[in-house]
Length: 341
Ligand SMILES: Cc1ncc(COP(=O)(O)O)c(C=O)c1O
Image 1 (cartoon, rainbow, N blue to C red):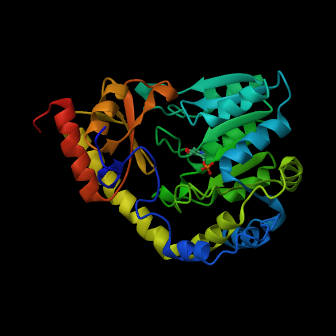
Image 2: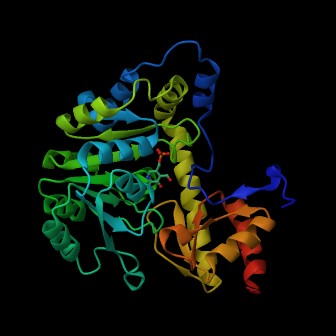
């Protein structure tokens, strides 16, 4: 497209705008790749246990949280078993459920409700889950691509409705939620909840693949049984450990993304665009023809996510970056949409 890589600014991914922690980069540089990785990811599980207060035996580390999504589907769904997905959301839940030929039931949120499943309370979603009795229910919180965030009480209601089934609570973007968010790991006591987290977004380790699950002990054992040996490579473990220790880098990245999101939110609304209120580090924006707007922005050196694959062809998703970069995107978007101000 004639855009040099150095000039391209990527808003299509929702990753820490400051990039990977320098101490993680040092850890990778010091790595001896001739040795096998620790097959149990022991050190990183210990570090995560200290951070979350969850016992190491209840923590499963995966080759990205995507591996854990597939492991959950393989472990808990047989052909024809029901899985519920609260949508629109991250596509890998459905892909994993399809692979095991599960019967997929979608609970849609409505655009007029701001894509919230809890408009008027989560009661309706709970009743549906209770009736369907799914083996697995997937809830992304905050949700990709809408940024909708359900408070702890609503999540607890959904877990209660799931009964004997598991509620998979994907918190890939939880570090970016600004509202003082009480740690959801206390919900593990309910016994049927699995919390998925990822170091892809907040610690910018997308290329190394590192995620983890906090789960009841029996679920952890079952997931580990199904996991291929040495699934989590040595570079991911070393960089993950260093990243978890670098809290200052994470805080700076989260603050930078928050500032960028606030600026984008105001500027997009000033352009007359409909923006879904988001608790995460990205914004869902209605632009009319998402694919066309994405294409035109690409020609100007900007990446945004066309949301057609989420079933939202009129929307794009914009990941927050530093304010000066966001200002450039808004200038390009004005040109693309043909708006003067
Ligand atoms: C909600 C959600 N969960 C999980 C993932 C995958 O994360 P990982 O890179 O850890 O596999 C993504 C990535 O886009 C995501 O948006």
